[in-house]
Length: 426
Image 1 (tube, helix red, strand yellow):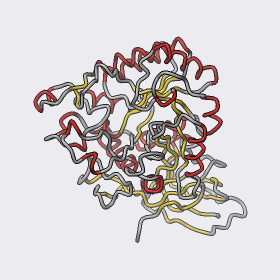
Image 2 (cartoon, helix red, strand yellow):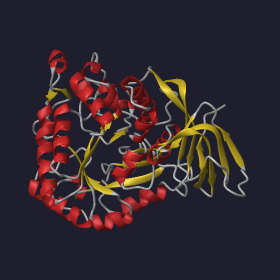
Image 3 (cartoon, one colour):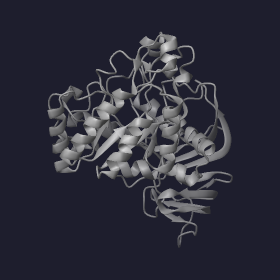
Image 4 (cartoon, helix red, strand yellow):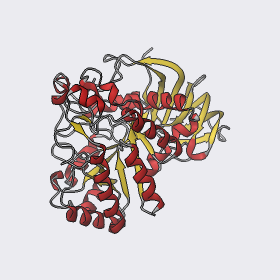
């Protein structure tokens, strides 16, 4: 189908485009930006007056909860959330049940996600069998099945020899290794940042050193193995400094930060709000501000939703017993816009952190409006204001610390491969 998106402000960070222009789609791909292609006759038209037309968002951490956790969310519900949030490509961690450690499981997930309204799904395969940290998975076979990288989600490989062998094997084939940095012994039993708030509330803490000790280990092993490392959901200023130093030392490392840690800190736990029970925990104000600055200057490569839908039973419990996680797919764009305005980061630069930069981390030809590329497009109104409510969220998980808040921006249309996947109800 041929579609004309007219009267919008087109922003494509990957190609340095930021101008008022029309955009043309044909056969599921970008046909032109600016001037209509020769012989083009639109079969459909979208009026983007007052809106931004940008590449569909690319999310580096979205748990779809299938297979195994369908009582928390289903593929259908979370794909509806992705489309409503303007997300057209997403990476899903391997901590399903069973974990994504067999090619058949990956192929099944990819097959289930092949509907026109569904975002492109890029599984992160398990680095070790069952995420148990003992035996390496068949990474080559998992890559053939569709995995784009390998990691452990929030679990840790305690045996450093196994971890080094895994990195060496991954490096041999050029597979990226994605790891969270948290020492399980230093973090054992902790539910909040080890600081003033946790002490006042009597909550067991997770110290920053739990991140930095783990980070030092995986950075050194990545250097020895020659692996490409991606540090997921970094949470502290000290950890960010280590990533910056590692890059200067020539280590191939990237990192992301979640929307929650970009805006919230330990104070937002309030009076034991279980919606603020996250992993890693919300850190200090200084840590939050360092992450915001790091995202602006490029030390942090990408902003992710860390989408983790949890059922109501998992959250309706005392803080220390509540399940960690928050929904985020539908909040990635508005929280990026909020940070962009507050930090005075130009919109094109901010959009790069949720489009072209995460696509680069994944090694995808996505996050761009380049001619000939897939027509994965988000059209949003930057001036609209949206109140976050349980009724408005498409995700089956209604758990977010931003409930009740009014956030900037509203997605008007989402196109996936040139197919209209989302438009708001009239």
